[in-house]
Image 1: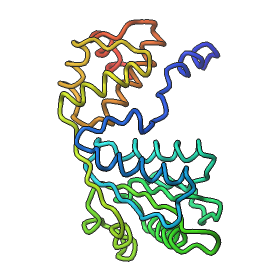
Image 2: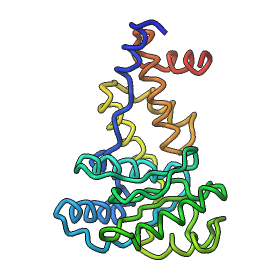
Image 3: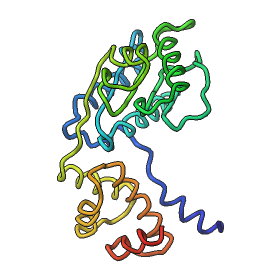
Image 4: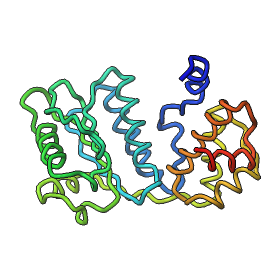
Amino acid sequence: MSHMKQLVLDIGLAPVPTLERFFAGPNTAALQHLRQVLESSQAGAWRAPVPVYLWGESGCGKTHLLKAVHEALREQGLRVGWMDAATEHLCPFDDSWSAVLLDEVHLYDSEQQALAFNWFVNAMNPVAGTPRWVLAAGELPPLDLPLRDDLRSRLGWGHVFQLRLLDEAERRAVLRQEADARGVFLGDEVMDYMLRRFSRDLGSLMQLLDQLDSFALRTQRALTIPLLKTMLETE
C-alpha cells in the first residue's frame, strides 16, 4: 500500500465510540446507569460496584456501549480487562485492573468461559484492593445463555438491562450523526437507499458507512447511490 493511500485511509477511520454519541432512544435507562457508574468511579466512590449485564439482538448498541465505557475508563487513567469472542490471547486476571468488560458472551468457547468466570470471581473478591466492576453483554438474557452454569448465574447477579433496536427515524438520526462525526455528507437519497437495502442492524449500517467513507476518500468522490453500488461491486 502506498504511503499516500495509507494516509487517505487513515483519515477515514471511524471515531472512537463514546457515551455522548450513543443514541439512547428506548435504551435511556441503561445509558443513564452506565453514566452513574462512571461518575462514581471518577469521584473515587467505586467501593462495591454491582455487575451489569446488557442483552439484546445484534445491532442494538451493546458493543458500542462497552467500547465507550472502556474509553471513558482509560481516559480516567484506569486499566481494564477486555474479552470478546475474537480474543485469542487469554491473559489471567490482573490486580491493576479497575474493571472487567466481557463482550459477546453468548459466543464464548469453553476456554473463554473458564477465563471469564475466573475474571468475574477475582473482580468480585480480589486478593488485593476493593472489588472491581464487571460489565458484560450478550444477545440473550442471562438464563438463556449457552454457558457453564456458574458463569451464567453470575452474569445475572447484578443489574440486567435489555437493549432494544432503534426504529427507522432513530436509525436515520444515528446515521446522520455518525456521518457528521466523520465529516461526511449523507444525502437523503443515499440514506434511504442504505436503510432500504441493508438490515436494520445498526452495526452493519455503521460498517457500511465506514467502508463508504474510506472508498469515497480513495476515489475522491462524493457519497452517491452510484458510488455505493460501485463500492458494493468492487469490495
